[in-house]
Image (cartoon, rainbow, N blue to C red; front, top):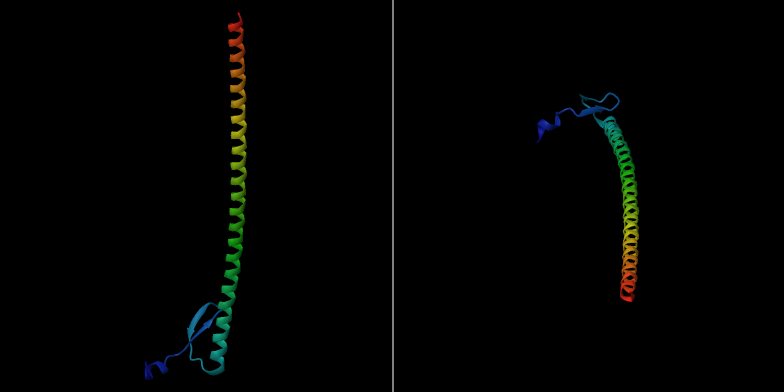
Length: 109
């Protein structure tokens, strides 16, 4: 890097046409070109970040909804299980009561 580098033309990126042309750009114009290119890239990055944030919020909302649905379904399953257990217990008590009544009748006769 030395004398040879100083003779290389700077690349002028035209964002409106999305082309890159080799031109010798010097002084204030070169600074302005670089600033415009940096501004365009910065704006593109800001737009991308906003889109990503929006997507992440959507994903977060969907995950919350799924978690709520799972919790509700799990609660319903637990309630159904409790009801089934109560019904089985009630039926067992009735059967035990009937068996005891039948036994008493047999013993008394």
